[in-house]
Length: 70
Image (cartoon, rainbow, N blue to C red):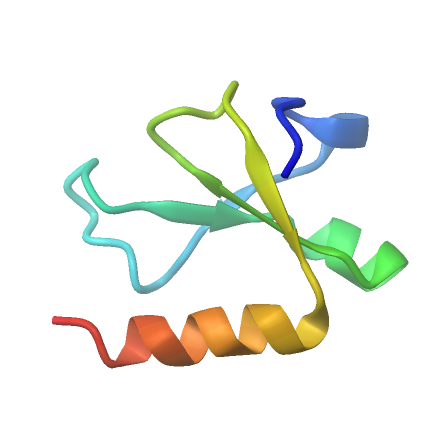
């Protein structure tokens, strides 16, 4: 886990699984994933806080988990 808020000026986008009410919102940096293979994920409520660095498989697992949450 890293606590740099915006590594290398990354563009962060919100997950389509986020609730849209400012609550449960996860963001990721697709440009960084394309160029490095590292999938960065952070909490949109705390953009200056830590982020997770996931492998492609780890990110896919997170997406699958999110699909099954109500």
